Image 1: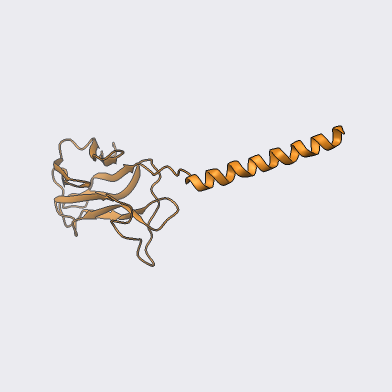
Image 2: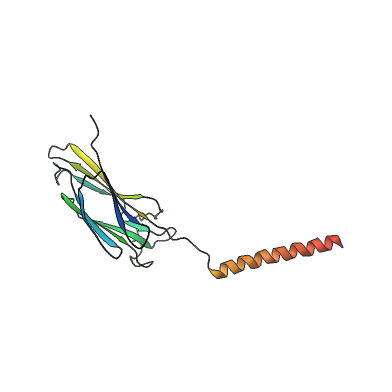
Length: 174
């Protein structure tokens, strides 16, 4: 017997415009809309699924900028799952605009790769597994560019080392 098929729904946030990528959802995702960097989509369960036997497992709802506790991306799911789940994805418009990771919460850092935020397991009234959908996102990560003062300090250090070597080289020649 073949395993039930599942689909993936991925919010792609690599520019100032968020897009949606879906695979094997067979038209169950609808109503995708965005206002700025806040988007939502409806995801319907497969035919025969019941809300009572289906489960939403949230792996993470808040994701941070690498090396910080500043929230960069956020998911909001309807609770509890119904046959039409609304999934909202928010991306920071400015660093810190979504706040910081709350104390005691687990907020993974965004990696620039596709990351899973949740899975939805759909079952029928008898508890038979119909599908498991994966909800995720891919977000750009800020490239760290050294500030001008750091670059100047590095270049000054290299210059001092070069001058010291030159002085040592002159003394050994004389």
